[in-house]
Image: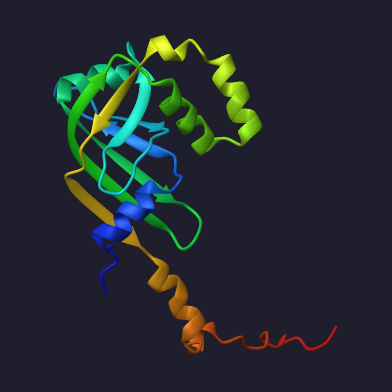
Length: 171
């Protein structure tokens, strides 16, 4: 049984609201890859976009590697994930205020997003926009396993049996 999603299902899932985990190679063989949670945006057929500090470790490593991987997951059952890797096609010094606002509203309730945008307004000049073109997709969707027990009769081990009797008898 394959748990892989179709490309279209991967794209729909990645377009959903998930905190992504960005992974990017270390600067040298002695450095482990960096893996950090990020907010991102994606539309099927488009680019993965994230905003991050222009002086951050993330962006320094992204610039050096020229590529990164993003993993998005659904933790609650049925568990699913999509991992996408590809080349960076742009690191833009400008952050579009509309794109930043859309990202905040993607992850936060309206009132919280509005407060966040005001409280972090300096990020318009402190951040950069990173865009990656998805090339390689990996995925798993365990929904079939989650549905199987509901549709199948219980096995002998799953059937409820009475508790064993106490050999000492009733107290």
